[in-house]
Image (cartoon, rainbow, N blue to C red; front, side):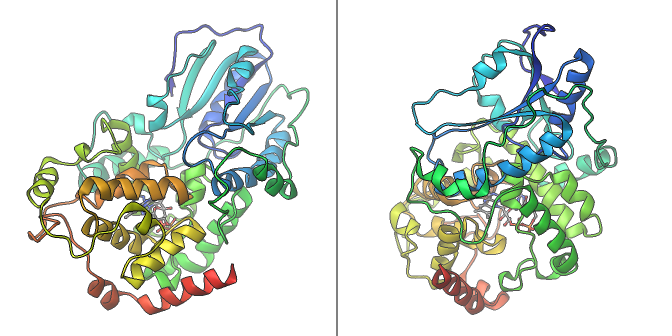
Length: 438
Ligand SMILES: Cc1cc2nc3c(=O)[nH]c(=O)nc-3n(C[C@H](O)[C@H](O)[C@H](O)COP(=O)(O)OP(=O)(O)OC[C@H]3O[C@@H](n4cnc5c(N)ncnc54)[C@H](O)[C@@H]3O)c2cc1C
């Protein structure tokens, strides 16, 4: 927990406010739990405030639909806790945030901590704290940027037994007088989204629905059917041995802690969910600009500069990449998965990124293309994992490899390697089927 300001508590106010900005869920949520404790201490009820605005490149039908699909169940669960719920839905880009109004009647404010919060310019009129509930070992437990998985892994291992523990249920002494507001029902969502001033060209994902119930269903399915195959088959996209939880972790519809406790039996999965994911949060928290090539290690920057003038076998611009119009059928299938589903399988996503580097005029262009595509289409985009893994393609958290054209000493991935190690034909067929079903 960290304080966000020196403003006083207003004990005569009407409620304690929990501003649910990152972890959009009513369970396994340390910020909500902390806010409930504060409300109980002050003898006040708790109001949860959640907002969806039309701002930014990612304000489109896909992200709005996914976020809204979480609202009915969150409302139901908050109501069962006795917590108030105000869901503010802005329809116009010019519409101001409703947070200042909600905060004006609050005794104190609690919100979700995450790396993004450090860059927000907040002017809150009441005592405000941020509570971390995105990672398992909180990002605040690390004092500096870690070099790679090998340096953060032992630190996480030391602290994990303390943090990898079930949470106490939230208990509120005072019920919020009006109960949770039934702001959204599932049938309303297409109409609500259509009425917004957002980008309507990015359609909702074909098969990935948002919400806590869907996240819990996917977790249960993974534990029952796939976890035993994860260690051996996670890099074979056609086998579907992965969890597909990244959009839910991104929107906070499920907590990493809940997932980690349910998957304790599988070390390979815990390595991704805890070590890799928390390394990404550490990078996003401490790098000066996590969306810039200047955050790469010096060896990676130097080798890329040395090879900047190397001839590229193909050169595409951002829009041709976005439209999946390259010469490579596998790459195009990956990009089409992103266009229709909002994710790309983890193993092919590395290939996808490496090839954008190989076929862009410059590394700066390649980075811009990857960020643009993630901002617009990726359900799990705009996340510490996004920036860290995109920069991983350029050498972040990796080591130097044998020198070669364009990449210098950055790790390279080839189509031959993909064909040798995975069933690329099955994947391409599957993506085609998916598009046909649309
Ligand atoms: C170029 C590129 C871009 C990426 N962009 C994103 C992104 O925008 N958002 C995102 O969440 N992940 C991103 N990743 C990482 C990884 O591909 C996804 O987390 C994973 O594919 C999500 O699918 P899953 O939930 O089925 O993963 P699983 O294999 O089931 O893993 C479970 C969870 O572990 C975490 N995880 C898995 N792999 C990694 C990793 N390499 N680094 C950090 N955490 C990991 C994720 O939270 C994931 O949901 C990117 C990778 C690359 C190479």
